[in-house]
Image (cartoon, rainbow, N blue to C red):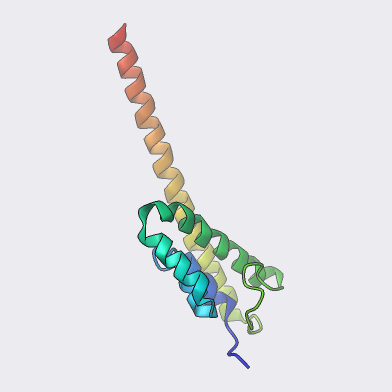
Length: 128
């Protein structure tokens, strides 16, 4: 029988920048093929457009499984340990990291949008 895996540890690994993008949670639960695919994609910059949201989705589904019960959809074959208070604490930390990452991404996108808008106004003024 395989060792039981912690949903909290898997969620924390999935939420961490770079480590989560490279599929650390997949290696932790024993899905080395999927982890290798995610790692290879991460090394190619264009692949990060897939692996970053992939790790965010993994984090969200693991945290959901911690607090709602059940088996995470992306990990149906894993022998999960019963959810403990430590798993719940790690789930909160993972969700906090995920929200920070999403907030930083939104902030940078908004800032870039505002800069482009200002440049467009300046170029219209020069044209007139």
